[in-house]
Image 1: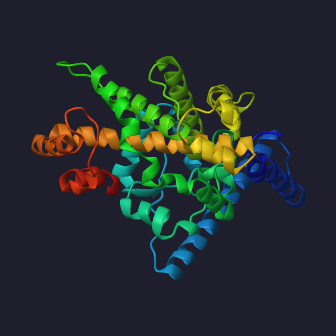
Image 2: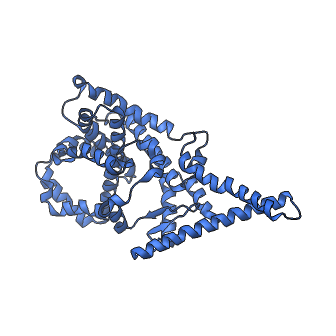
Length: 387
């Protein structure tokens, strides 16, 4: 069966099948003097537009009633150039690179504010960059904002049944499975110091350069070292291939989410997740197989070993690792990029933070004191996470 058929077929029924049936019924009962092809097409278009207007009006009315009951305001709706905001859907489908997506979001943000509803094909699609809204969704009222079946189907090929594609009890199960390993005792600075030292040595000196790629590679290596205990510093090609596969998979799922219910129509005859997921799952499967054999394990402990010791379900372990790698890499890369940018435009703070870091780490880079004791560094590192 076609991907996403559970939600796509009802949409096709409402737009492709039902209007001709209603048009045929009306023509049979109205009995016009002529029964030309042009009349049939005209009747079909009239029924199609009328039914959509009615559904949109009824849906909007329901939203307005619920908003009044809650004492809230409606989310601003995007007004596209084409009917049903089809132009927005087409633009989303063509936006592959992060720069194109960011440009579209920025243009919509300038016109409609930090929170808006794209309303493609009459389907609510709320996008926000407002920190207050994000905090409410992710923290204050988390249980009330589920991913839902639609998101699950769009992301299943990438995230599987992992923590970021689950709701309710399943989400709590994933959280309890991995939560013990987020204790500070499992995130020792000494574990990552060699990676950071190698990263600093490889940076070009005296010339400007784009730091995004080196930071993204560092974030991937740090995440894999924490998750699986594997150091890819000497295997740049493997790391770059894995990073590219993750980026491609994210783009595919992001495009599906933005397009909405009809996303399967843009992937007829192909599965854009097949190749990147072969790379990603092909990377993790040998690691999981070796982790199950305690005789082949590396020294030390990592999250992979805890997952393997907690469950015999290899697919569950695989999905969990993919989800956590995605979150760990993106969070680390984003935070590091924000911090470098802030240091570059605030030299006074940069000198102050540098002095505190030197006091904690020493000249050899080995951290021998608690960084939480350094107030400026702690506040500087926490600030981007709060915005």
